[in-house]
Structure formats: C-alpha cells, structure tokens
Amino acid sequence: MNKIALFCESKKRQVETEKLALELNLALISSPPYPPYLLVLTEQRLELRRTERHGPGPVFVDFLSDTMNYRLRHGGSGNEAIARAIGLKKTRPAVLDGTAGLGKDAFILASLGCRVLLLERSPVIAALLADGLSRGTEDANIAQIINRMTLINMDCMDFSPISPDQRPDVVYLDPMYPHRSKSSLVKKEMRFLRAIVGNDPDSGDLLAWGLSLATKRVVVKRPKLADHLGPVPSLIIKGKKNRFDIYLIS
Ligand SMILES: C[S@@+](CC[C@H](N)C(=O)[O-])C[C@H]1O[C@@H](n2cnc3c(N)ncnc32)[C@H](O)[C@@H]1O
Image (cartoon, rainbow, N blue to C red; front, side, top):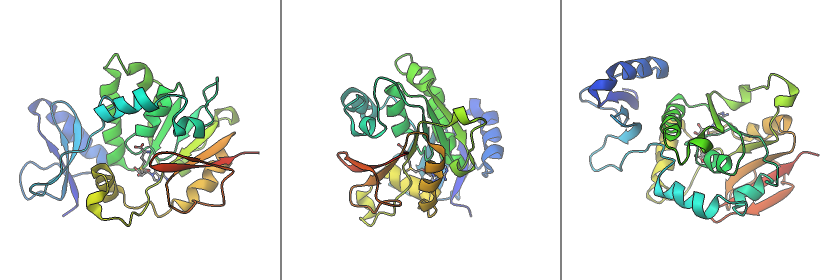
C-alpha cells in the first residue's frame, strides 16, 4: 500500500477529486484500509491528514491563520530578518523561491511587495499550496499579496528563464534539513512535509544552481546550528529560530 491516497469528503467535489487523483497519480479511496496519510478534499479546502488514531490535526495552507497574521503584523515589515536577507530596499527585488513548500516565506516576501515565483517539486505539496493560494485570492484582505505569487509544480533545477531579463534578482532556498531532535518536538507541519517529500538529499546542488541564476543574491534559510549548504556565505543574518546565509553575486 502507498503511504498516501486521496479521499473526497464533499459530494459536490467528487468530479474535482477524480481529476486531482489523475493529476497527482494517487489512488482515490472511500473506505478502509487507509494508508498512513490521506489527502482530503473537504467542502472548504484540500488538507493532508494522518490516519492513525489520536493523530495530529490536518495540515493545510491557510494564509489567514493566526500565525500568518501575527507574522504579517509583527514581522512582515522591512525589519524582519527575511526582509533584510533578501536586501529589501525602496525597490522590491523579484524573488524566485526554489523550495516553496507550504508557501509561508513566499507569502511574507509577497507581503513586502516582492513578486515571487514559487517552485515546488512535490505534486502533493504543490496541490496543497495551489489550494491555499486559490482560497487566498478570494479574501479581499490578502488577495493583493497572493496576486504577486505564481506557483509552478516543478523541480527548480529544471527551471530556466526564457530570456536573460527574466532572471530573478534573488533566489531564495529553504530545503529540508534532517533534524536530529525528537520528532514530537519538530513542528507538525515539518513532520508531515518530511513524511511526504523526504529529506531533500540533493539540497547541496541547489546553491550552485541558485548562484547561476540570481542576478543579485542567493539566500539560504538554515536552522541556527546547521552547516552551510556550500562555502562560507558573504553575509549571515540571524533570525529568531533560523539563520539566513547570503551569497552576494559580484
Ligand atoms: C522546508 S520546505 C520549504 C518551506 C517553505 N520555505 C515555507 O515557508 O513553507 C522545503 C520544500 O522544498 C521542496 N524542494 C526541495 N528541493 C526542491 C527542488 N529541487 N525543486 C523544487 N522544490 C524543492 C520540498 O519538496 C519541500 O516542500
């Protein structure tokens, strides 16, 4: 049995779910036995659930959540470490987020006025993100931010701009990091992400790719004590929980 299947919880969305099952190449199931994870289309949204008894709640993309709201109000300013890391000044750099995940960092960057191209290679994670973006455009408070975000489901290392002037100012990278801490201490979203996408064992190649594409800088988000993804960066900016390694393009 695969570790994930698709499940439809809304009678109205049965056809949509069948289409999604084909797109994602997932089995559409309606009764047990269930695999460890289910991607569920509910009346309101697409969400990822753990099927074990007493498992954690679902993971879905919600740009209107309290956490995102807090980040927008308190951190989504020019002072947040991520803003300094991308070199935010009066002009807003064009950012390519090569490891989009659930789109939180990209959302903060878009809230700062940057156009952000989000590339995510996992079809399941990209589907969750696409669903969150689509719901976000329907909310007047954040639609303007979401409209600056464009998602493509692809491996970023296969991306090449059509013309040289389409190269991004900044390539932003936040690959998975193999945590050694007890899994219960790692945030639920990160545990779900790791279960679906693994540990990004090729993350070492991302930096060289980013450096060949960005015109101004590559920013790599790392856990505070993690090794650099490559050589020693030009600058390091420390955030509350993470650090940003910045490689300036000379
Ligand atoms: C730690 S998550 C990123 C979290 C994201 N910064 C956020 O704020 O939600 C890493 C993501 O990068 C994706 N990824 C890793 N390597 C990739 C590649 N070469 N191309 C596209 N996506 C990649 C993984 O599938 C995973 O979803």
